[in-house]
Image 1 (tube, one colour):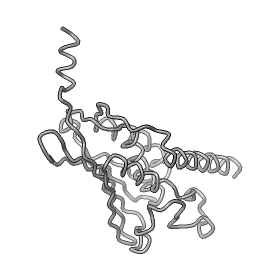
Image 2 (image 1 turned 135 degrees about the vertical axis):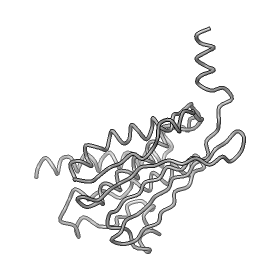
Image 3 (image 1 turned 90 degrees about the horizontal axis):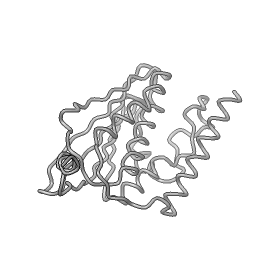
Length: 207
């Protein structure tokens, strides 16, 4: 009990620090070459042990061969947003539920594409009234004082930070949910295509 409480306190402190950093703009927005498949693959690897511990089936439904390109965007913000969505999906799933992480791509123009990061779960779902509130700081669907399982408790800032970071890079987060059937979150963000790709950069480097 002491170990669990310590871990929970540390998690709360990190969440509050993250909220302060986001509110005060301590992380400058960057435009750097990012590999979308690498980002989601790292997140899958990061959260797989937690999913196994909770007996939740975490799946990465993406073909690496479909994602050979690099784009320009802010890796830190994109990774934090998707991490928050995956973390919540696992946290609020029950034993033997599933969480699936996918990506899709829409061509918006010759130099820009829309990338959709999709997190779908078969957990308990969210009521329509709560969906309107979940991106507000410190809002919690299941307050800890109503929940005997403290592993699901938290300060309620993860989605608020994700929403702020999404807005800063012109992204959008949408949610659909059915109580007792599950939820789907879609984070869509426009990414620039670089004027020179990784293969061309490597050719210049080698020559």
